[in-house]
Length: 255
Image (cartoon, rainbow, N blue to C red):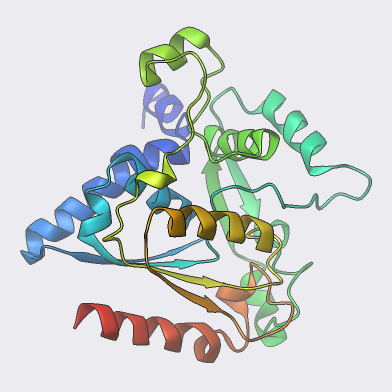
């Protein structure tokens, strides 16, 4: 990959993923399967991307059936800072100063909450989990820092009134229009009351918008105390508490 290609790759927010990557994948699956609908199971940022796509292009709210959202995320106003004595708002401001230059970051598993938040961790697998790391681009992180500061679910801010105007037709950054998600959408939420990333107030804010839009929701709250964001992936009872329910949803809406 050339330097210019690398620069373009890391200059990529989840807004771009919703606008370009996700519809391309869905359209490809429709083409090779000759199916009119596609089921989608997303986790965390994977849910934010689909909510963004359905709001920007409501026709995908009729194509993606069902959209199963684990740890659904749009606004992140309830997220807490992992650093004592430093607020999440202060941390986001500091991050935003260093992230405008396109760059790759590797985030180790211990920073994602696996070890410092989970109370359902399969401790016999810690040596495996500790090897996991995620690569992200600077603009992806910058977009999330932006949402923490704004407390809104908004599109990527190019930090230039001219660039914003060229992209959005206005100098200020618009919100993703969640109210545009069509009432025909089939959305199933899988959430918990102990998630430090998808917090209950933010979940309730999302639910209120979707209900106001007339979307009928399947709303499942995981029946386990202190179920953290990382437990969706590493929790001992994830199969029984989450994945059995996902299979039931897929059977109900796709067969």
